[in-house]
Length: 285
Image (tube, rainbow, N blue to C red):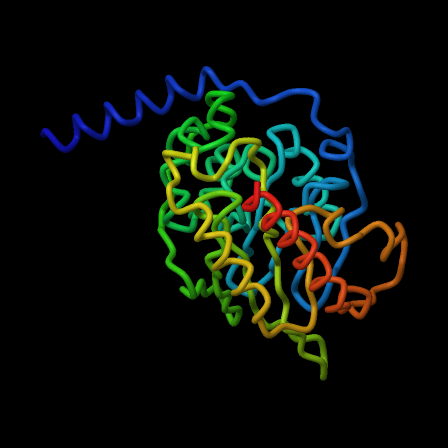
């Protein structure tokens, strides 16, 4: 009886918090702008907005959706999935690259509407439960997305399996405590692509790292993330933001299917090195 009462109390608290969601405003217009969904490679599809990337991984046992953009991304994602010929309700697993409002604003609604299970990096679990209020930096804005309780907490290198697809989660903290990337193989006829969905470790604070009392290991985490991201074996990559992998320069609306445009590894390493230089500059300050 006590257990039931506790569950009811937790549900009430979550509902109460969800009623006071205040998503930050004045975001880039590209975050809410529609763009053409398309097939990236094999069973991987782009279904997000112009800049906030959402990915659909299609399997014969249902589909996996990675990231959901802002709260207003929901109708765009649903329309994109439908226009590609897939069933929105066929989403069975939800994944996330980072617990910030611009990547999971629609997560709670999609989870409720589809009944999908949410799998997240264990280090971001608390931020999801508090609607972002416990985030070491963006928590200053209060509850910025509907709180949502994960169904499974993932550790570094843990695998997510659905149908014949196996996705490995790579723990890449710093940007958030549980920022992560995903790695998996996808086949297209005789070709096999090792796909990296990268979550880049940009620094978002103005304060010194030593001043972040609720994330004392932040500097160490960034160091480990840069090291880890330089040693990933992949041959095709995308990222949490379309602008981070120059999507709209590489592919124009109506373009034919061409996975090779996303295989520039030098561009990936240039991005990592650029971010690391910014991080080291921050450390020196």
